[in-house]
Image (cartoon, rainbow, N blue to C red):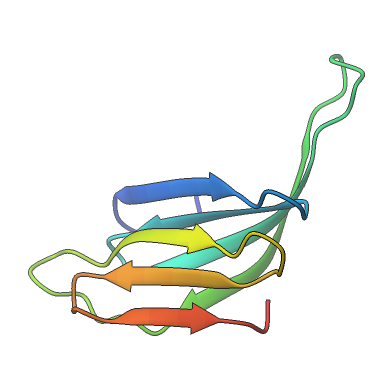
Length: 89
């Protein structure tokens, strides 16, 4: 629904209620997530931001990313050979 091409990586932040997904469309989507203890209640997933900065090379975009352990920062690695740091999430 959110990415135009295949997903490459999905991950949760270890401290904040954030989730992200990267794709071959060259973007990383960041979501605010909440899972409730009541299993009959659906989880909350709210889109927060779309991070752009990588070029698509040979149909490959953002291959992987990693969250900073204590800050809401995201490091992404793309097929264009770049590593990006996003701090304003």
